[in-house]
Length: 137
Image (tube, rainbow, N blue to C red; front, top):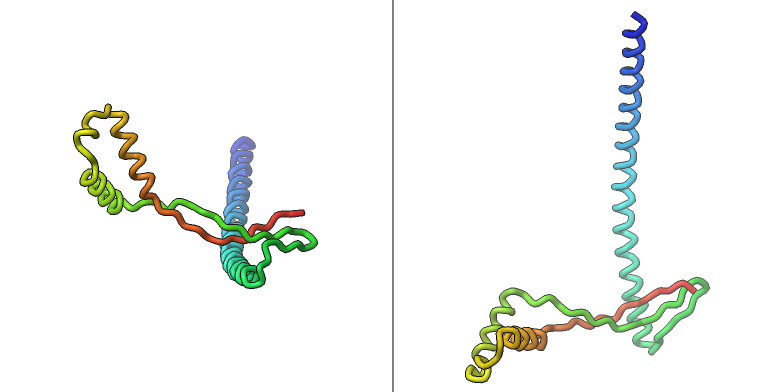
């Protein structure tokens, strides 16, 4: 009979622990959701302030600002914009319309592939953007 009571106590203990875990999980989920919402607001405000600083720095011809904790610097970034599938098709059509077929056919398969790859690389578009970098002192 005592073995049965011991099993019953263990089961109750595990159920109690499970209920506590569920309650804590629920609290954590709520805390995480509210933190995410707050982070979105803070990130939006940060971007607004960065844009305002960039505009002021541009007008005032300031390249760098130093605070007690950070060094802010206005820089240009350049990134490649992904070519859309539709544009790739257009570029390939233009390539095959412009290529000199007698010369192209003399090339090996690897050379043909490299030739097409180089042509497409030349059609790549880039986006330049001014950003504000902040580095700790």
